[in-house]
Length: 196
Image (cartoon, rainbow, N blue to C red; front, side, top):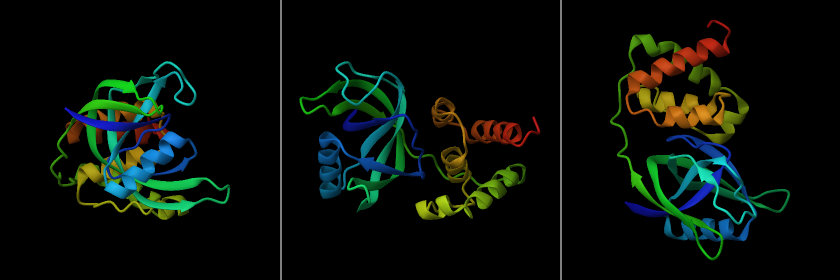
């Protein structure tokens, strides 16, 4: 098990995905400062129930999350610190606790990164959807480069970008077989396009 700091959110970060964050609480300002200085990642995972801000009790958290690395930062127009994080390794949540400064830390089991998986013809429509999404200005601002020949990167990038329920994103993040993930994405895309 590995001990890491957590940044719980209502959103899900996927491997290879990118997400902009506004940092305003002191505990997270300290976390970002420490992460930028050391280069260490921190864990991001979904809050299943409860709240994180100002809560006395620990929130209920998803059992799986993603390590996040800060790849960019800036002071936003509203005066807050803005950072962009990129998803790395997945992890399974173990025991977690709140420190005196309010930051949540946890013991986690890191999953090895999946070996690249070649795209097959049946998955070509998924690649085409991702290529279409990459033309969107928001996605271009995030600068999420995906290796279009690696099915894992295509799949994780689609899960990150598609308008899916966050609980469903957690379920998809937990899949460990690329065929299952691509099959689920195909069904979801057909449902989103009205072809289901």
